[in-house]
Structures are given as C-alpha cells and as structure tokens.
Image (tube, rainbow, N blue to C red):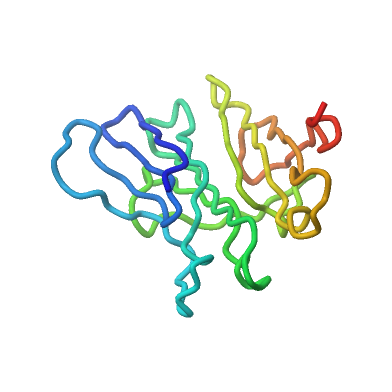
Length: 171
C-alpha cells in the first residue's frame, strides 16, 4: 500500500509505503525504485512488522536535504510490533542508511505513535503532525487519535505542542 508520494524539488520522488520508504528519480520513469528506509528488520516474518511508512515530507528551504518519515504501524499481535514506530530523519537527502530515529520532546507520546501524517508550513518553520494512537485503537476507544500537534520551530524532534486533542478533533 502506498500512503504518500512526495517530490523533493531536486530530482527525487519518495513513496511512503507499507513496506518502507522508497526513492526514485522524478526526472525519468526508468530504473527501479530504491528502498531507503526500512527500520524493522522483521526477523520473525510477521505481516505486521513491514515498516509502515505512513508519511514523508521534505523540509522546505533545505535544498531537498532534510527528509522526514513516520513509521507508524497501528497495532499487531504483540507490543514488540510497535518497537520501530516513530519519526525518522535524514539530513542527507534521504539516501539509504542516513535516516535515524528521533527522540521526541513535548506533548507527543513517543511510545504511542501509530499512523502519522506530516505537513510543513511553506517556510519550513512550523511542522504539523496528525498522530494516531495504537493504544487507543487496541482499547477500542471512542477516538484513535493521539492528537494534532505542531513543532513551532519546525524541528521534528520538537518540542511538540498539542493543537487539538482527540475529543476536539472529532467535532
């Protein structure tokens, strides 16, 4: 499954998929897609541990160098299925092996990140995230939304501020 396609404006196209993050030239249709991020090695062959990259964005005004992706499987057969969920950043244009998992600060519960969608402001100075909660999904809660958040500096590590709580977002 493909969740999102993003161009970096410098000749690369990224695809956030249920099998990792892939990159291809945006200048030609030739050649194979290259997987650039696949955090979960899935050594047990679980269908739930395939690196569900649900969002990919390129920070404006970085010449395509800063690429942000969310690994957000929303639940599986065990809590270990969620170990690799989180926010990953590359400051090397999204090249293979350049992504690292970020330690988040602020209002986001980093241990409860499911499917996530990112959006930068046009200046790149603000970053927004809509974050699903795997624990709320597992509990059959009225909402599965952890919340809508903003990083007012655009730093994907935060600090993140809650913009809208689950109850407010439903109305």
